[in-house]
Length: 486
Ligand code: GLU
Image (tube, rainbow, N blue to C red; front, side):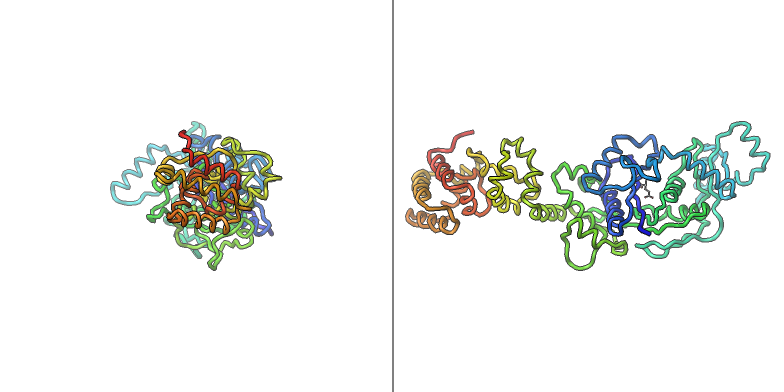
């Protein structure tokens, strides 16, 4: 049987990196085994959930490429996929549990429960529900029902121990005496998380529950519910927390935690996926760079480690840079098209007659880009005729008594070169420098600023070849005659 797994976010906030990683592990597992990845929106906390949060989560998942097979927008045989549209199912399940003696009505007033809890805590003991309502007689119950007393439904936790095998943590056992008769339906008719999650996982035929570590302590209650409902218990894999570099739980103090922020900052989804996959999971070996398909091929739940994973933005930057290098130039142009247009640097010929040339330019620039958008500025010197000069670079490398003569002499030599083949251009530059009694570096820096406007660039002689002789001569000449003030 191919696995059926789910990602079940509560839309009370944006998709954060921890949630994205949980979604990713589920998605990889489903894709690895030809299974089904289900997206279910757990929106029963109506006051804190919102449609905006739902669309934010869907759009971040879509950006990451974590497409779901059943869920919002795509439907499926187990819908609806929003919990607030499934309330009747939770109530029916609670009724079944009451009928079978696994649950009972509780009419206790919140104020009374609070008073008892406060008293117990004041006396230094842990409070658990005292089963007042479990002891009610049939008449007591009838009287309360007749009076319309609000009631919750509580699960009757039997004595003994509950255990389950966690695919990450191994065998886990809980003594049930520490588990309260927990509420499964609140007096407002809404289910609590434990009931809704189990009813849905049963109905949606979930085979593996892969989720954050923070749910481990909830699992025994849920196992009790599966058993009481007569349903098979799925396998569990609880994924360790993500920590900041200071080993504290990752939070906004450490920087952006919303996936959408990384999208806005210009990270590639490929890099984000690669980075998140290795937070707490390891395929073994030293390889770090993986494409989406390679991750699918290698993913196993037992590669998830028990240790907490550290979120390190420098590492993410490294992944981003590596994935930029691996993008095809065609892909880069398509992804940058809008921004290049906005910068006035786009023309359609880049995709056809000029493709071979611009592809060489991109090969030169890509290794220096940390974000894709970092390519826009350095591309300018290649794509447009006029140069934008960095003032500090001009002050440093294009001012001084001999600059004009030097640049004009060098421009004249360049004009006579048969081509700007890098080694030959370099040799020519070095002889001009020598003849004028200056260090080659001085002429190299001056040329770089004259041709690109910037003090830094990839290898100058490769740049010159790709900018083209005519434009190089023109830029050297105009720089010699004084850089236009902007
Ligand atoms: N809605 C729960 C959460 O966001 C998910 C619970 C689960 O995966 O079982 O934490």
